[in-house]
Length: 111
Length: 113
Image 1 (cartoon, each protein chain N blue to C red):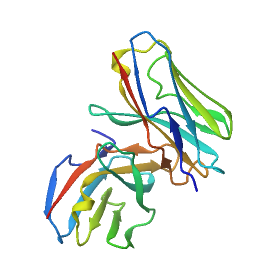
Image 2: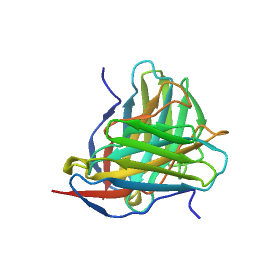
Image 3: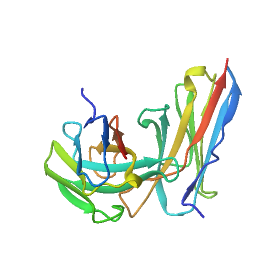
């Protein structure tokens, strides 16, 4: 079992819809969670971090964390074609300093 | 403010040659991370430094790989000798401290023929 798992996609949504990206992790003591966006040929760009159970909103982005279910998600409201990218979930446990990345989910927003 | 700077952006070399990748972290950041990204293996951490000291190099694939951080504003990742399977995009990232958010540089695309 991979430490951080994501559906590779592609996830295709129409413009204006809500895109829901999911990530599960295996280490129960994980404490910090991050979402990165990576456009093709570019570097990962940090878009959200979440540390506590519940929702965290930033503009059109909402990160949701459920530590009991070992599940973190990213919702993108009013999806735009410019949101088309690969979204990487990253997890850091309480003991370590390293991030473990999932394989990423490719999102396609169709006009 | 300038982000993480990496050079070169592209490197094409022949098998057996030495390759040196360079990174300048964000000013004031004390932690620096080297990653490698391939289609097959995704994004993998190779080594990281805190206050210029290597903390964990367990991700370095072989002895052919080495990394240094002689001062707070410069790090190198060296591959000697290079092999075709080293072809990948190598990213450097920095953070204010070990458990803070990491910010990535633009990467170096390495092709070993």
